[in-house]
Amino acid sequence: MDVRWLQDFLALAELRNFTRAAEFQNLSQAAFSRRIQSLEHWVGTALVVKGSQPVRLTEAGEQFREGAQVSVERLLEARATIRGNQFEVMSQVRLAMPTVLARSDFRRLLGVIGMGRNTSFSVIVGTTSEVTARYLAGDADILLAHDCPVLPVHESLAAQEKLVLRQDRFLPYASTTAGDFAFPGSGKAPFPLIAYAQRAYFAQLVEHILARAETPPAYRVAVQCDMTDVLKEVIVAGYGVGWLPESAVDAARDQITPVGGPEWELPLDICAFRPRRIASPLMQKIWSALLQGQR
Figure: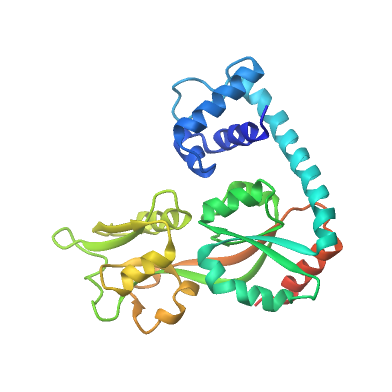
């Protein structure tokens, strides 16, 4: 039995949707379904009610869920302890962060932590969903990620120790030369939206902003991608309006400008997460440095 089967099952039990759970686990839906079936064969009974929408667990599935959660936590805890001892000798710190924060905040993070003579860093980058999954799987000691009070990045992170490093904002931008495209658009003249892919965390934030608007905006999706840097370049080129974290704008500040008003913005936190278990002296030292470097 592969421990990843348990992680897949727990993701499905939490998200209640095969497609979303497969995306979170970075698998095709077909491969994800085969893993769930393999787990059911190993257990010896159905764990999921066939055809239910949203997904419901069988009575056996609900019973198995608790044991699976405990087992995964203990296995990851044991692996983290063993790896922690090894990394303590090597003084290596494993960080996970989305590409957008790797560009804007990694250098700042190193400045806060400090580069000791015997300390090295291993950095995992990718989309927010990818690096969060890697961190929750035990592949990193610290996760750096955006988090929004109205829409947390992932429910499982609520059990982690969280440190808000600094504030950020999520707001719509357009090219300074192309104009605001009559944002927020009208039925006769919808604005071109530079959008995040559906599975992206920022796509959920955009959906929340659009859904809460008193007057529904009118738009057409012009470009869709899950990488913030790509969307920023498209906005700079004047192809439409798109939401970006303010921290991601940096060098493009003279090329793009916010559009709309405060009602189209969301406050964001740039946060560090770590497990609540007893940390090694090295990790505790790093966490203390982050705590002192809050701003």
